[in-house]
Image 1 (cartoon, rainbow, N blue to C red):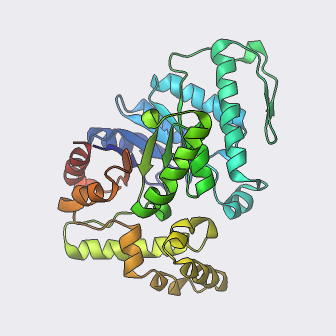
Image 2 (tube, helix red, strand yellow):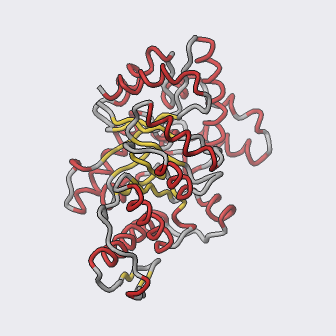
Length: 340
């Protein structure tokens, strides 16, 4: 049995998020996730919360290092109150080139910084809920000022669930130590990588913190090639081959390649990207790699294929919600099959 997350399209306009979230809820999913890309994820979460009643609403991977812990805390606190406990906060460190080049934020060791970020969030939440002084002293974050007249009021559901978007072993360890869940990336959703690397690292983090797996949710988010016919499945495989080739040109996305002995492919993709030969990149991802990285099946067999890959490894599966609603009845059946 899996909890099913549905991810809204990352380029969805803010004005359409509420309706799409309501549609996802009607399909029976457990969690609706919002990317922090074309629309600020907090704004998207607010829109989704206000148009739904049952489903949990999550930021899939908020670019947290581009926001101070206080900024993130204020927004997440208000969303937790607005949703009556349905809001979940997902955080992501982002790869160095994006964090520096797109957000103009200096790069610092991501795992250590994320550990502090989570600690500082909890210090802020505790200060507000228990009306105690705010004090957090770390290497990257120092918080010691919260006037009583500007302190948010306590809320009914202060235990905000936090998950991390993680790819490599170090961030997976931090997730096990400090977070309540982990959401994979399409480049590290291969079952062997989860089994041999991620679960071990999550366990290391839990052991370090004296925690158990009972309240931890590992959610896999693979690219899936599906459709009504073999032709449609094949066309989606080729589209996803291009996406994977682009992602895997970034070294931070290589852990699965390295585990399978395919590091040279990552290096070649990086070389082609730097030389501007984008049209040659997809061909570097052969069919064997696609089979490892991406489940492929028609709609009628998709739930079975996902179960075979991830049963016993993950507690949740994240699927994209297509913008076009023509397959909603079929997607609803897939969701129910995964939840059974």
